Length: 276
Image (cartoon, rainbow, N blue to C red; front, top):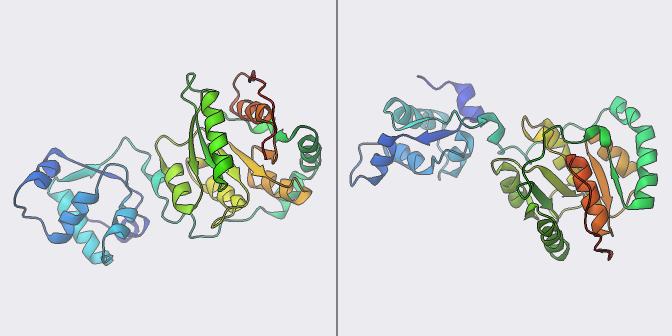
């Protein structure tokens, strides 16, 4: 099975070790070429071919990488992981390419919604697009996962603790590497709380990249913003945000917004207290 050039450059496939491959790693001697052995060590059933290639130092040429992968495949050491949505796992270019910005027509379509959204934010501290609620049925209680993208350590810790207290499984991310790791975790999060201003990334760009992704495009996103300006709301709505939560916010309002977007029961405990 020859590896063609598109395969090498796209690299979105995911491979797993076969029984023979596992034995090869445990053997005291090997007949594999040095590069092939390096690749065999890196293949874990989750990491894409493109990312494995970038982890090798020095990065091999297309011809070298193709030959090494061909040796592993033809020798029966690895096989495609057909249980993974392989194309959905390639996050190599997630931040590298600039996402397509909303078109003028998309901005026009959300003009009136932005106006009503700002009013709701000012009154309640959150705004949820009911029409854009998650289409996926909720998981059993205690298994709904939320990724919190927030660089303020104190706020991030509070959000995680509060969501876990409400029965969610919460993880946090504060920079590019952590965001990519959180988004590529399988299965993907059921909801993302996404800060607009981050130290090495832009929340709106992350939103746009998610909406371009084959799997992440369906993950609900609630934007966390300190300012509910018309421009910000408009930009988020056109980019595909499911709603907004303003800082500071009431914890019970946060839970209402999260549960509304997920389409689950909205009966949070009233814990009071504004979070800065």
